[in-house]
Length: 218
Image (cartoon, rainbow, N blue to C red):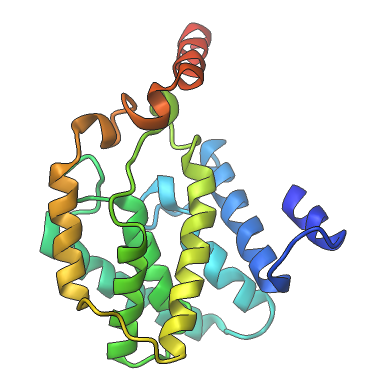
């Protein structure tokens, strides 16, 4: 609501679509945090990225149900390739399973499902490469802080990568090599930075206080 209000008041940049992408990513991720019904694609912590990219297009009449289904199908295919090349399943706790990365790559492809295979791969490679090494550091072990805001970053990254692919911008590193690099980077990350809630922002003084407060309440 805050993002929508700010946009209506002229206090945001990027136009209507970007404002809708931002708001949708926040709303979907917050619904997940409130234990409402969501689709974990690929995980609950990154569930806002796909809806944020696709739903505004559907509402604006730029994509019908068939187009959305086609986009999701392409996204699922790229997601499966990513999973198969790394560990076989989508999780961050296992080395290389950067859950938000998979959402980014899928969304970059989904944004314009009519791209050629080469353009789709370039978009996925850019989306993965742009945030290579992003840690998973949920405060109190919950996918709320900082995960909700990272859904917005993921969605905007996906749109940007799709636009670059549409413009014919190539990526220097092939998609398969980017996926392999992601796996290697993941294996090098400390366990504290892989969904354990023990490092990164979760280990800050405020993060620790939040975790202690929640533990006392629960």
